[in-house]
Image 1 (cartoon, rainbow, N blue to C red):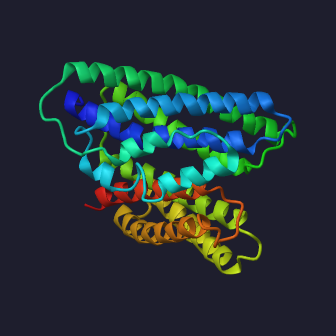
Image 2 (cartoon, rainbow, N blue to C red):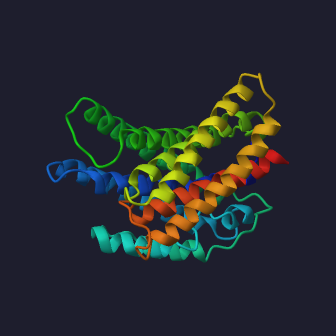
Length: 306
Ligand SMILES: [Fe+2]
């Protein structure tokens, strides 16, 4: 059974990463519809605002509470997040609240050491709201995917991107439900599944980047392609480890190295996209978004590697 203190720390740490990921998914969907689908744009916008509010609430409860390692990992914000948001607002006209990002930059790590029943109740209520919002967002994403796959809708987001963001929302929802039932998370056991999960996500990021670069960016396209292949291989290795036909240690070490490399590639890419040095149809916030996910995965891998 999870202690009250661990429940608070883990819940808020999870929201700081995932509530932002969810609000950005809603934004990517919002920006990808065709002009015909105004109803879908409005729904996506409502989800985006709902997750802005959830993230804002998480931020307001987090100061001096969440583990310093979470704040330092670069999964909450990166040095590029604010600039990527400003460029994205400029390009789309969608009002992304950058003050949230500034508040996150000011968060101090810490660690409460004595029980705080009031904070625990607030966090539990926040988790409950996030569970409802995430379940609804999953339905919305599934509906879009089914429309796209049955030729009822066109969107500029790849079908695989929609599948990819459904999976991430499902992981957030699963972890929230476990926290709400005060389930202790055993990292040893989880490592297999999370390495399989995130290696596949990393492979797909590389493939999204490959497909969204300008066709003349040959060098970057070929690097992205290599990362895609490498992470396909690592996904297969993590699967073999899950089925107990291969040792996990080796997969963890290889995944750590490959994710460090991919992280560097994403960082360079984001740095190149912001001043238009890299030609692409990657919205700047997407570059920063996938960079944060690599940072999140690296923090997990370092825990698994211990
Ligand atoms: Fe992702």
